[in-house]
Image (cartoon, rainbow, N blue to C red; front, side):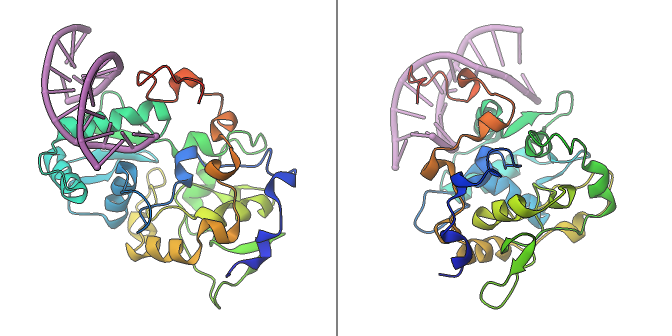
Length: 260
DNA sequence: TTCGGAAGAG
DNA sequence: CTCTTCCGAA
């Protein structure tokens, strides 16, 4: 166990958890790993985005926004990854549309092939003291938090190293105390890439090598650090995110199993 | 181009 | 469940 410092703490017993900043639901899902299911589309997109991959897709002008520059190429790439030779943009975009109800993505209307990840809005909801972090971000883009095991703002090494990692979703530096936040990061330090701060040319610096994801996940398996996931503890982040109605949680047409 | 229903695969 | 496939409508 690399992370003994947290496993003994029951997350639900902490008052912090009930009102702290949380990731959007989907952000907790680990990226592809050998034992688990296949890559998900949003993971794949983030991966390409993070690598600045060859022109098929790139970040847009707003934070979290991305533009599909070459839809059919992107579809081909996606198809290759999933072993679906007949993938095309029509199908890929249908998958994208399923993300709308899940609040993972939304469409940037009026901009062709442009979508936006739901990063910003979701993140600091329920953190009344910190309505606006964008300015902070653009001014100090490098203040990223490491996926550390810690408490009270004190970082603890893992395997002799504290791994630096750009975090795309969160702005821990926006918080008064990083206590709950740091904990929140450790279990599922999720993704590789960073959406660009508005108007910044920092993308290059924010990009992480592809290997980072694998590294992070192998070093910080969720079970080890004990960060509660929705699946294990029944948390539903949608409750923190502004009340998504059941009817909007996606796949509503796929059965009358509304009470899930 | 974009949307979302319907059915089906794994 | 997460798409994939197909398709009519706007």
